[in-house]
Length: 246
Ligand code: ATP
Image (cartoon, rainbow, N blue to C red; front, side, top):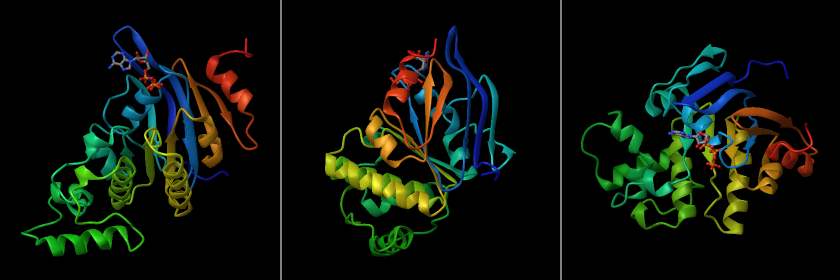
């Protein structure tokens, strides 16, 4: 459509010394859209996510959120601006020894919006209010002892608790069983249906094309293709590898 994109990335460049990780990335993301992001190893996917999620500063280029300049200088700044990211390493983002409820409320506990001493019961009530009745992970459990798939669900729920405009998922299915992958992809569609835009990074072309409204291909730090359904996998692979276009 012609609506203002939720997130726009224009001519984004990121250099690490002599290495050009991003050489001019352009993309637009709209509300309620699932955007698949694919590319071979080293194509720049992680770097793009780091810049968008406030973990790294771009060398040049422009980010816009709802049409306004967006220059996050930290992950916390990105989150409060409306971009929530769930990184691939779920164990780094889960605090073991704390309950699922505490892990869900971590951002609120950290920024002081949960004040005063909370009993475990009141903490659970707050967490439940946040995630709703359909959230199936036991709020009392030690989050460090959950399966990877359940940790992932906790992190997605924590990210959504910030009511982001954009949810970024970095290879969320990498360590999941086939059944867990399917469930996560259904969750992704349900999240997008609420209006939150989702960026899904994955190495699995089949799952990306199954769930995405559009697929962006990165190669050597550039956007080299944007595909829409019906997807032609061979064309996407050719764009990833740089064959068939020269
Ligand atoms: P993968 O699928 O392997 O995660 P990717 O598409 O995410 O790959 P990036 O990790 O973004 O690719 O890397 C893009 C390029 O930038 C690579 O050449 C990489 O070596 C380089 N690079 C990334 N981070 C740094 C860094 N901190 N210092 C130097 N070079 C870096």
